[in-house]
Length: 357
Image (tube, rainbow, N blue to C red; front, side, top):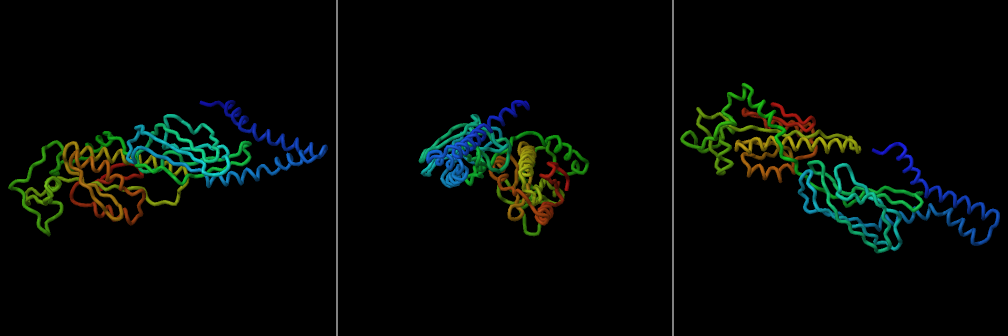
């Protein structure tokens, strides 16, 4: 950990160029006032107008510096290092000032090249290859987010947000974080009376089944058989208990607070939400039992997870379609659609909790 003394020393070192400029400006002013002469007047005006010229040069740099970022694929795994490349190019006709690159808390690099200050000559290009690791699951901007441009004396300094952001989708870790809660919920008396039993082998359609006809209750559909064959069968009345669990995914409500701290908290919250969701889905997939997931994406959408194959599709594709925010009306529509006589659960991003509906 950096001590107060180390921090003070670092700040003092950063102020040295500015101190030198002030000394030179004062010295040139004294000289031109007492001695005069064309050379000293040129020197005096050069120091006097240096900040203005530096500002104009940095403005030129803003439009002439090109930064390109690339990563192997856009589907990444949380905590896994991937190959990363960044190219910084000066397409202008004057040299750049000092360039320093900045990245956010969601990213880490194998070699932290952002501690270096770069200077680029006209038409010069610099290419850096390293490894990048994304710390959280979800969809967000990774890699370099801003650049700082400043002159050699540190008088003019501008922080610029990059327009070429690196948008990534990071898959969560597959864990058993939800297992204890799922076991507790499904062991409650109201669920033990259900046909749904995770510790029993799924029955195949037999004489107790018939083809679905319009008007049959949706709850009577044999979802496992439908996922396997694509044909809808319903259980006969004496066996019409449902063996499906419904799960509604309630993401964060829309809000006006878009400051940096709020965005950082949202990334961390979404990371846990996705990990918990994947854990619930794998809990059912591993035992080949049906879980109907409800989410909102331009309307209420569903996805049936009932085994390792469907889980893989859900894991790699469907969780990327989850909305980032929803309105009160969207939430009401989702919960209404997901409600039924089967076991109905809701997973809320706001607190990361699984609850009955």
